[in-house]
Image (cartoon, rainbow, N blue to C red; front, side):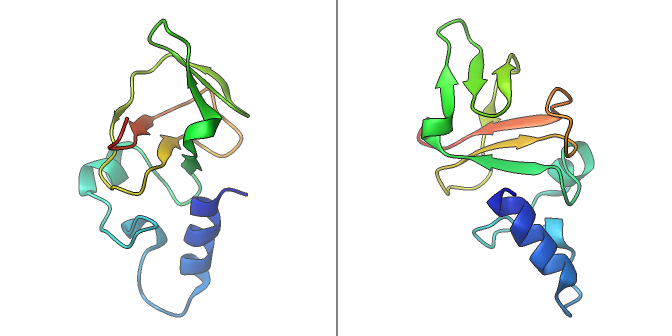
Length: 103
């Protein structure tokens, strides 16, 4: 459904020995602490700026998710996207929230 999930699935099905969630969509390596705390193969969800709306109260309204009260950390990659990590189908169980560098 999301670009990151599709990329992860493609990597998982490829004949290479690379683990799908070892790399960000830009090809940079996912740090070990992020893999340990935030993600599994289907838990990375990527959003554009026009899908994320600050509420003015320190919270964020994310299209398709709803209200997020967790403060985002700066993203470890510079691709201009927002990232939420939660189990597929469980957007209320957010493990990590990253804002783009330009935020």
